[in-house]
Image (tube, rainbow, N blue to C red; front, top):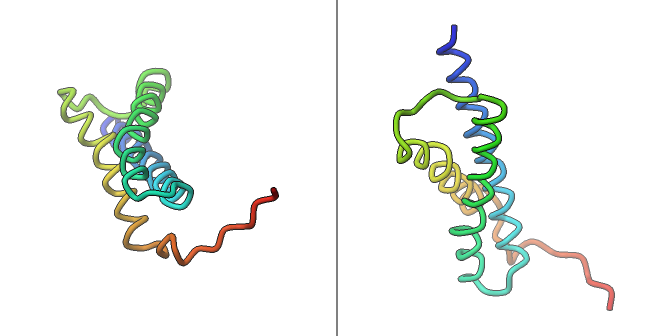
Length: 106
């Protein structure tokens, strides 16, 4: 029974992280003027937030199994959701140039 709870906690954590990474990637791609700026934020800002979330979800709430090494935790809980979130944004969402933003009040 513990294995199912651990697997469910891990899937919940990866799912939440993927959702956050996809939304944050879309936000950065829409709001930043340069293409390299979005990539910098995606590569550095999103993993920091996911790391803090991982510490809270796995430490305070006790979700997820023991994956055995720090590298496995980084790949499964941080790198995989960032890659999946970016892929979801690039392949399944409309291009940022096709999205109309509201006019700003000056």
